[in-house]
Amino acid sequence: MKRAQRACFITQTLTEDPNRDYPLAFFAEKLGCAKSSVSEDLQIVRQSVEAAGLGYVETTAGARGGVRYVPYISKEVASPQLVKYGEMLAQPDRMIGSGFIYTTDLMSDPGFVTLSARVFARRFAAVEADMVVTVETKGIGVAMMTARLLNMPLVIIRREAKVSDGSTISINYFSGSADRIQKMSLSKRAIKPGSRAIIIDDFMRGGGSVKGMQDMLAEFDSKTVGVGVVIVAGKDEQKKIGSYFPIFLYNDAGAACRVSVNPELVV
Amino acid sequence: MKRAQRACFITQTLTEDPNRDYPLAFFAEKLGCAKSSVSEDLQIVRQSVEAAGLGYVETTAGARGGVRYVPYISKEVASPQLVKYGEMLAQPDRMIGSGFIYTTDLMSDPGFVTLSARVFARRFAAVEADMVVTVETKGIGVAMMTARLLNMPLVIIRREAKVSDGSTISINYFSGSADRIQKMSLSKRAIKPGSRAIIIDDFMRGGGSVKGMQDMLAEFDSKTVGVGVVIVAGKDEQKKIGSYFPIFLYNDAGAACRVSVNPELVV
Image (cartoon, rainbow over all chains, first blue to last red; front, top):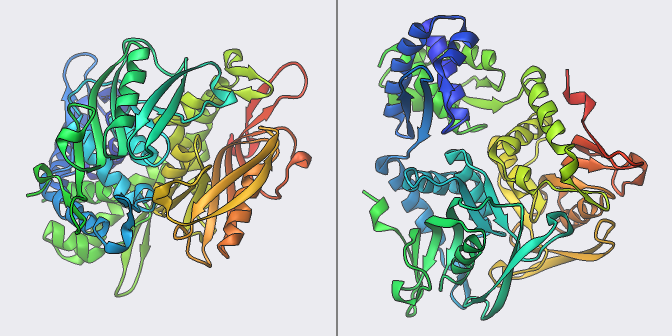
């Protein structure tokens, strides 16, 4: 293979497998060339990946030296897409009443899900988490894609325990949206004590279910190191939890419902 | 940008966005070069992608001519990974009893999910589907990733309707695993009549829930054009449905439970 082909091969391998370390020796063997050649190929890869604005290539030096692709969507690339989806979310026929928006289609649309996951992966790149946690159902798509980009396992908390979960731990919490006590369950073998988790959910109003997930993590002697929510409705002071990161804001006070993109994310 | 960098840029863009058509003019504009140069760059991309064994680059000719990346895992690349996961699934501590296997961790592990999705994306590349359908919860990860690779929306059928689904259609079906009548619901606006769907699920024994999904699709005047199931337990003749494509087979007859990879998939 010539240099350009080798560089493409490396680009594809890294892009398909975000946040995974590849030793230079891996590519040297695959491509039948010296590690020094791989290093030179990587210069090309690095520059082109930077130009695309979807991530960057990180190199670690030393004997165990390797290379990884870190997804990182630039504000310039994200902004117009987020604005477009914000307008879709604000369409009047999505307003179901009682402050709910129909988002089922978007929450499992590959384009929307991948974009949201990229925004979360960028935001939580440095929190040193070792897992992503969500509660079924609608946030699973975004949570799964975030886990893929960060190369971490996803843990899905169930509403009701299933036989195949084995023994479980359960939490009861008050859901403002459902206006009643709800339950969530998780298999005892799902989380190792001392884990650090990023919580991802599709929608939050009062924060009851995120609070429930935090309580669940505490039951496993584990810690919440980040909370990302695709759409957050209402005002900060009504929330049961402290810090969280929304992509879209939904203001349903007054007659006109309004969806906007988190101002931090737009140019 | 030089040729090698341009080729890397094209490789990354296509890999990040599987099964989406990119007109040559898109790259010509982005890279500030002639379409004929992009065509030449694509030769390099095509050869390197073929060597990686994870997909191929497809070009369509004519005025609206474009290029797309079609994920297609080769048997040689898939086989050793499938065998490794098959051994993990067969570990005695995964056997929960009553013929159930603990798979919760794997069904949301990015590596396992991506591999399974690649196998399904390859299998169903030519069925001309326009959506992927699953029923909550454990299959959502694989279904979402399959939808991403095929660039199709995912439709998630719920066990119970939620307020935010608006009006829904419900199906009752007999689940052999749960040994009782179960229900599934879907928002009336989730599927357009005349759609063609690939059904993806994590586990099947009798086929009741896949049959339920087929019945649901029929309610929307839509058609099942493929069924992919990650793990299928028991024998063919016990199934309520006709054609399906398993990745792993689970033989739980007799004392020793045994998991094997679908022989079609291994070298």
